[in-house]
Image (cartoon, rainbow over all chains, first blue to last red; front, side, top):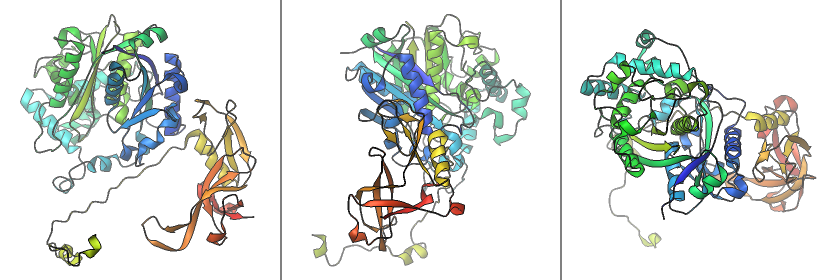
Length: 384
Length: 167
């Protein structure tokens, strides 16, 4: 039995650089309470299962999953935690509902990035301890190397990458929840400090705190509980080889295969025609371009040109990262992908206020797990 | 079974081999530092400990007292905003006599971790230590009282109570 699955509730806390007023538990509770209110469900009575997406080292507690149930109403209920991006949690919920195992499920992920004081060392700790760690301690050089190869293979220019940062930060000014909205120019980006050549400071997203919870339901429950369900039409995910030596440095193959899977599940043959707007990973500005190509939302090597011609602006053919993306909203650790799903849901519901897109039916959200990972997930949502 | 083996086959590595760099040795000290936001619940809980008081919150639906203080009840999943001061006396719900330290070292003087049910709280308990008593005389159900640090030495931490002693 295959069942349709819908997102019927969303809840979140504002995305801010620091959030001293809330412990991570209180942040999860606040986001969860809003999501359950939005869905019209009581977690103790109505929600069958829960999934959270968190990484132990990010939060500074081993076996972090034991600290999850109380904050989202899951005590003495079915819950599991993934050390993965939030879209993986969404995919789990999709599968459990789609196969008929549960009817209503909640997905949670949050960021308390401000509480992690040595993020560079945290990423360095993910590197191979024998082959790579002894070479250099700040692993963000990987982004510089990857960007360099991407520019070389596609002929994309540094200016085209920089335009992504200009666009996304401007988009974020219309998003009241975004932490890093700004009106900047191309020169501001190009003149900002060189961090890991050719990557400059304003092309790197900054961390933010925030919690996101979503409630998913089977078709029957979705119609009973919600007058504006947003359907999960497809999900996909993929991991490339972890080693720096054997991965593809020019292309985001993981995103391409995750996208292919999601398109297949959703029955989408021509993404360029059928996807109305997309929230794709833009942890670094060039990543947005690399991901657009991998997801076949433009022809190979043409993402830079598309951005330069304004083809991804809010009022264009394919608006990309209308929320502001990670460059404008802030990078939210494992909640990064859920923020992208959140924006797609808000747009498809027509609740995006001054940044609302006209006449949108199908949106795509894509995540990358961040350095030094080579994995990502895709969700395709529709309001029809 | 293994105790019957007198000589293990093979050549074990010794500290000398490591010092002489006969094997590839790589060392890494993860520099992971955190500054956790206490938020509203734990924030006030710790501030009150500094003042020598134990504060909890009370859910006005299930009537449970929550300790350490939290701003939501995980059973009823609702906001909790009634603060209640609790006594610093109670009875031992359960305990252990720990002869092994956190580095698995043998402790000459054992420590006694215990769950103390606070008097008059309806069964809410605090996780702490018992001292000033012969470990073998500690019993479940024993009455105990908190021994606080001197006021000027308190820092807003669970260790502002040094331990609990029998009364």
